[in-house]
Length: 495
Figure 1: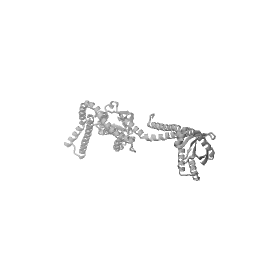
Figure 2: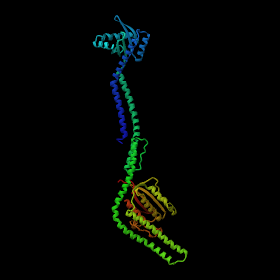
Figure 3: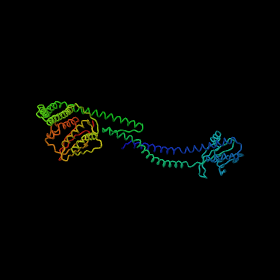
């Protein structure tokens, strides 16, 4: 991403590191030399104070005094010269230099050069010492010198060399540059790693939000720490559950609203058709039952086996009538909307496997070869119980009409935002003139065969009514070796 949080964090921290190094370089260039000079001056003043305090307690300059001076010289890299002035001459009492005469000459030059100046005199009267920066032309070196008087009236000079401060600043800045470049390189690597780790939960939350935008509410954020991002993730989990619940309720309400107007127009027509069809379908079994019952009543047969046959016919026809009535009641309730449609998101593949498992024994007994391979979940929006009823009708229809190679193939096909369920069975085609009418109640293409297995001609009507209640499509396709029935459901619908 062009404006990713990881990149912005890396750039921000890298800019802070680079800016810090630049500020350090500027401060080093501007303030290192004054700081260095102030440090040298402080060393001389501290050394002078230590010696002055030490010699206040002593009246002589012996070996012990010399050792004390050498300690100061060694510790702070300061050359020390203490003289006693008598009769205009200077007698060296203590010196840490290998060439004390050179120090004496330098001291004398300072003494005679500065003593005539009024400001120098006032400074010496006030502090007993003065600090100057001088250059030794012979050695081509710069020195900082403290010179003045001890508490006992003796003269003292402390001298410390000044390194090439400008060269030191340049070396320091160069070293700082190299270290800074290395620090920037290492920082960029560390910052990128750290930023990716820090922004990983953010990327996860982004993916969850994207899936929720596509109405996939099965995503869940797994929090490990109890920081602000984990709290946000837990709230997103709660929001996903609430959205799925509200989505289900909204789809159910929308579906009922869309069906309401159409339902009112069709109620009267369905009532009329229902009475007419029921009367027609019940006429034959009622006549059979009545005929065989009258035969039993009038004792037209005498043997036990014939009476049992009559009773079996009556019970079989009664069972068919009961099955048809149950189917009619189910169909009537669906068409009139008495059975509410509860739209929910469920795994279609799992439901279909469950139905096929129930029919497995009958399929095996009939020598049918069933093909269905769908192990991964396929989620749809529909009323799960009604979809199960529709699919069961397709399977039963295929079992009763399969012939030839006796193959039944069940498939789930994704078609954009739709999911198509299809059931194919080998056997005879449906005549073209009957294709549109097979969804009508009580319509039978092969009446003899339908009668043979006890079919009522209502199963496909129930499928059609269920799909209409979902506002979805269903249909049939003839192939050279068989027939395929299908219906579609919402896989990913936006409201």
